[in-house]
Length: 618
Image 1 (cartoon, helix red, strand yellow):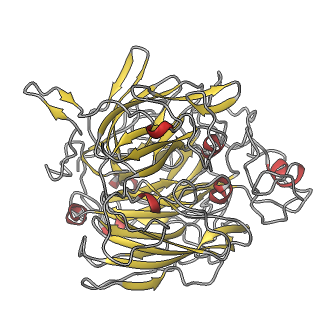
Image 2 (image 1 turned 120 degrees about the vertical axis):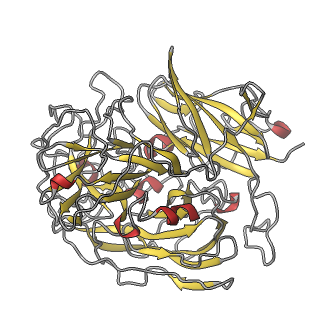
Image 3 (image 1 turned 180 degrees about the horizontal axis):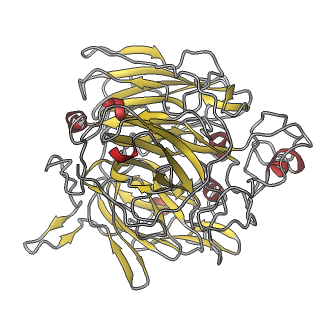
């Protein structure tokens, strides 16, 4: 068997002491036949059911008729109490009473209608379908719809056009609190190629798992909350543990300075409550890391077979925490995580990431909001061992010691047992084999030189505020205020900010985003898939050796991202009042206001946010 081996030296790491309560997951299936529509309630299970950390509750589209089927589901935002493991019951906000919310599994070309109802006690909310190239009215932000009041409803309708790992979550001024409190779910879009590779070049469907990673802080009784966020005995990836950077400890969030969803002081939170975190910097990470809503700790492992492959489709739903993932055997020896795709479907060939950007080859780095599709080949010589997938600290902040100062904790345990297999994956394995190869979003001359049809943004039309053509996007921190081009944004802005950009429908752009701050920022553009070209810092340039579609890319301090984006049109399913059309869709679904921002959520709320307005062609 050919095995990908990392040259990194092994490092022993400790396990956390928490235990998880395992409860069998409830599978939810949406079956649609032919061209008919089916109407089903996703997640009709008692509130508070705890999930298996290695499974998600799912809505599975089984039509197999891409582009001809419309599926309808009901989705509710509702308060619930769930078991997150280690005997901790958390009062959270959920989609359909579960954390994470039910997973959508769709095929390229499918259209989905989501009948959403807000059943939260007092908070507005909505749904942003992160990474989906949908019509503007379904993007779920305050720029595209009025946020849904408690007791009210909104219908989302969109068609999925690209394969990949996506997710959904609220997106308004206080949605950072709601995401931290459990309001998120996964959405996987597959293409026909994927099914044909399962069980051969890719692990089987049974050996494919969704991991929605997040973190949370749960309050104890008033007066008894922890005064430090993390146990100082836990290991730190740098080899030392200073414990000096703890963010806002639970006693601050729960007792000393508790705030409501708008950031105003309120009474202390009760035991089991999840505090609001929109209190300004330093916010810090949650105290407990969750895998599909459960703290795995030293929980019962998932059984995997030696010599087989394990495919993990991973989403980082944390508000702040970077997930730097490393798989090791019981002695700490690393096992490569091989990236096969993520935000835009399968790559042409597998890749070993890392070796630059401050994480090791064979590890996977997933910033907040990002997703990766990875495969681990389970070594046959590790039969009888328990493997552990860890999340390590990452150097994402400013300053000399630029770690976030969070501990190394497990997010998955694997028990290697069963029949020996001979699964093989190498960096030369052709996954796409020429099928639907991603183009360069450009025109090439005879010498292969690439030029884009439109290289600059447009001037603001009709005297609207904004920045004109030829100006790069700059992420700034001036005078302690986060912003875009030194302009502090507002998440729920009703009027366009002075940092707004404009472009014409149908244009292909090559743009630059420069991070002019001391910390990393994952840049996310709504509504459109982008192709990264290079990351540069001074004279050092990292040119991406492959093309893929993404919607979010981490930009290190002082670095410039160059990317291309094509502003394709798509169907519009709504009338001018925001109601679904009774008949056929119209053109112009890409027209409108699309946010771009840093996906460290408190960064965007504090001002690192603006918009790209797509306007009609002249």
